[in-house]
Image 1: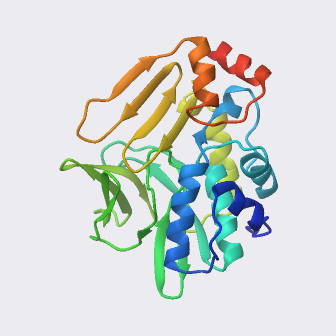
Image 2: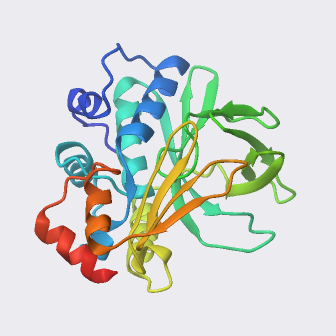
Length: 266
């Protein structure tokens, strides 16, 4: 089953959290926001030809000790273990991006159902451009998070939809059910996501960070800043600027040889 044997002090230092932690809504909200701010969404190991190991020890070593980021399976594995160590009850869920009634996609995203007492939340630190903080797992409760609003609704198929709104335009970000997943389910989903040639994560470098006002993305050579209600700012980077963005804009700790290998994939 899932482990909670995580170095909690090292994790809290990594995300810059110094306040006491306990299994309550305030702690969950603080940690969620701090995690999203501190640890990047990125697929660079896939582009470096490395297998993605989603065991807790490997994820903790990469995201906490080495100062790297990762994609959903890595973020959710780490955050889930941290929350369990604090005393939350955590179920790992697999979600589809978008709405399957409009365009069916595989269950390729990992998210978390988090409970303490009678309170239950959706926590998702590994989507890249998704939630800044957790949402109560209940229908029809719109919550503003920075420049965006989010809500959960139940679709005609009985599955949850996470919807994002900005400037009165709403879209379904992901669709999920509350069926808990086992480590083997995540291993299979992770393997397909990181090796399937049709997966977006095997085709080009993807690095993202989101704050209260904007989503900053580096997709291949294209760097963009997107703010709700404004035209996106886009720029095609040179090899040198790409390397600089990894180091400065996204604060990723990479060896010079790794940067050269990534630049070669462009």
